[in-house]
Length: 395
Ligand SMILES: *Cc1c(COP(=O)(O)O)cnc(C)c1O
Image 1 (tube, helix red, strand yellow):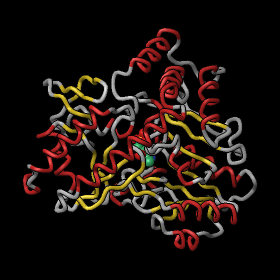
Image 2 (cartoon, rainbow, N blue to C red):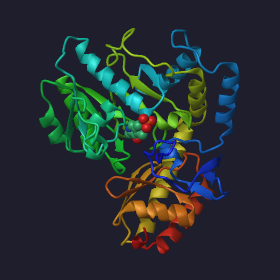
Image 3 (cartoon, rainbow, N blue to C red):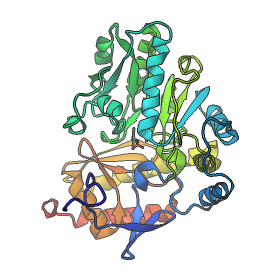
Image 4 (spheres, rainbow, N blue to C red):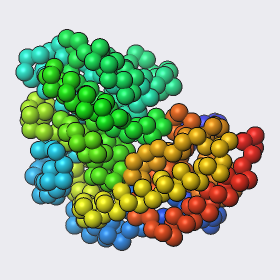
């Protein structure tokens, strides 16, 4: 038998973290890494946050799981907090980002079908999008590398260029249900929607009776310096998917919707065994205790601005490596002139700095939202040293 017990869909990696301390990971062999990946925007509070640990411990002792057949004071409380913090009137809890996007897709379809518009099932999505790895969410993306071997895809998605408003308008037809987009594309390379694009999609949705659905699985929960990233644009969606940061490391996601957009999501239309379980609710609630206030989020915005300004200066020293700094808040991309994968490995293996690769030759920086000056200094020391001794051929 040569297949590994762990299904080999991820590369083997020598870094094997066994412990986390604030913004650092410690691996099996004792090496320390500065974590500017944060579980891909999940560990918003860093690692070993006492508030999050305590909330999970207390809830685990009290009640870990009950069926959604029973009433949920914990779920009602967290849903109310999310409603208070966002555009939404109602919340469906999930265990992952892909499930949150799935719930958003279903909410958008049934919105039209419950009103008798059975032909309106198609969502217009945007190139290089990433919405997850389920059949519906890979079908929602035009990225062929995620489709190969899994055809046939689900019908009901139509792809248009990101930030191409004229293309989006031209794609509207009798089958269109709405638009689905990441306000800041993560996996696609930290590409930020233009204000004209966001406002234009909202206006098109209003004109044609369509829904604007945002995938904020990566960009949400304070990451970009507003609670949800769409707030930067002053554009209100009808439906949003969140996950990643909301659990701070505990698997939790949610589909948020306005009352109108959720009109089809009535008794019996959707469900989840684990979605909204008390342990997840305790984790989400502990995360909001820290992040769900204007002061914390304003600080993320200020930290992001300082980091990006310093990165702008820094990349000037290495014009052969870096082309551009882009992003919002602490969702930052360095567009590179070389293949970023090799540089990610170099930073990790030679300098103890964890970052993430992304599409469009971009290196992603997604530090815990709780980074301070000490972590920023350490980051620039490691990044400078890494850029200075990088030979692109080495990988
Ligand atoms: C990570 C991500 C997802 C999928 O989340 P999972 O928890 O891996 O299912 C969906 N959309 C975006 C924008 C993401 O970044």
